[in-house]
Length: 492
Image 1 (spheres, rainbow, N blue to C red):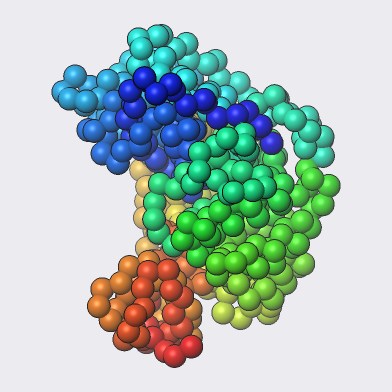
Image 2 (tube, helix red, strand yellow):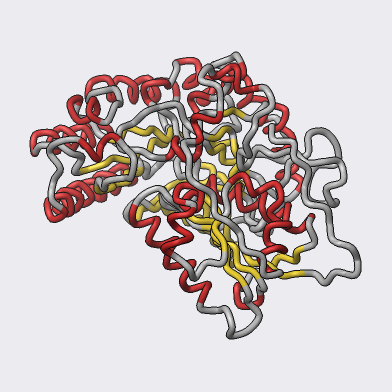
């Protein structure tokens, strides 16, 4: 664990400084922003929601694909327009894009007053105070963060010479309300109030998928200790959280650096037993690493959602080999059969990449055939784009942008049709719905088969009197609207 203490709060004579955090990208970035929020508040900053009210705007960027990088740049530019017009004095980039490009981003985007690395997080308050005082921050030279940790996973458990966002543990004097009263104290401050919160299980990845740059800037795979995960779950429960959403780059690898590859099978029931936590959901499972024991644990533990977020990426064996991944339609369908044998009502989602170098029309047909047979509840379709420093950039057979766009459109339309059909199959099923909003005798939330933000939602009618946000309501599915479900509340 990164045991660097939080920045010491400023003396009483120093004025409180306002800061706004804008977060882009995935749930892992949401966790990182809440670490930054805790460190900033401990360092004397006052958090505000509106960037126009902030002296410093911190943009937690995403560096995953081209569209996400563009969103990050646009957000930084929009924030920079506030400077000189009111309260805002500085705009700072952090997060994956900042880590990945460092000096290059700083040089190409002078509108940002600083570009900070993950290694700046432990003293983020000090960094921002220096920038506000007019100090020039020298952006870091990007490096492959995998090289900063031992090659052998079990050797990574010892103290590490780098900051791993979302893994920090605080000094004993972290202000009240920002961490548990005892035990390992997570550096975290909630930025939302909903009944669901992401909880970081691990960071980094040891896989070498030819299209993915994430391991180079997120680093090698590092698990959080079970005690840290459990203590943070207890803290989240004390702040009104009812569902914890376990996030990582690869949840099926959890524990391998702690000497126990089956550690997740042990941890899930412990998390499900945390007082106040009524649902535990696991994200990002690698099909090639998904063990029968983990499937059984997810299926057999009542408070763990029967939800399988499987990273198929494609179905053609040839494309998958070029991606440096494993599988084919037959093996993937066998895996889905195993899951549904253990959990017949399981929700299953996946993402696929279309237009990978060398992909043929026959490969696309193979993918479409697999999707038709797989009966997935949610499918994300992405068009391939070159990512700096990845092996796929140098592969032969790159397709034109128009061809990729056409293939994405074709597969997306099919995915939309198939997932709508799958939702219709749910009519007549009984589901438990975590309510996220309530209006009179109806509410909206998510059933066990629906992950946060990307998998659709469930509208529940005829709610019992007194039903509120955070309740888990048993309901009967009576209709659908695309991937969304409509259900009527039933008695417990």
